Length: 297
Image (cartoon, rainbow, N blue to C red):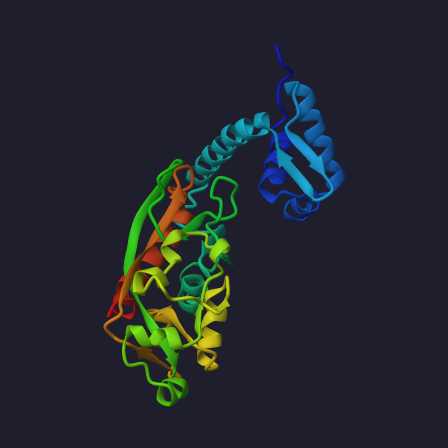
């Protein structure tokens, strides 16, 4: 029989697996990194197999580590729910909730409204993580993720927030100086868009749907940077209505060109019933529903 597993060792394993670096895990857990290292070494000895490959750039999970992560993550989530029920936390929403969102939605829509969530739940600590990729919910990069499509793999719970419209935009001064008569005329303008090989979701590849012959000259992985470029009269680009219409310096070009995408609210099955996660999900869904006209033409 294997030696009994010490829960503190398993928690150290989870911390490193989620953070990827032992120094970062130590900061999050508030312990010395040597303690985490000692715990993981003891856990590997108890199980009889290596859980991490150690590199100068960080820790990567072995196949055995990946299997243990899935099981340990479920245990951690179950324990969290039980403790929450026992402490009646459902009445008082508290703890840390982390929301991962695309930069446009996260910075342009969600960030200005998170103060309302904090007012509703003073004991809730809110982390907003904006990134140009979908966060890993299984590795706890986020408790809640805003996605551009419904997940087809993993134990995920998803609900559609809203469809949102996109169109071609230019700076007002640019559009007045260089009006665009039709789609064919776009080829004579500098176009701004995403870096092709850094697209984290193929639904962001807009230009082929407008005209397959179009080419972007300035490419950015960040939507806010694209918007800044367009506002500075650097060229024309595709922007979501909820962002572009809030900037008085921008105008729509070729209003007949309209694209539609969707935002999805996604949580891991193991986390969806935690009160802090549930309260945050409900808040996001409610503010999007209340301001639905911002997202559609």
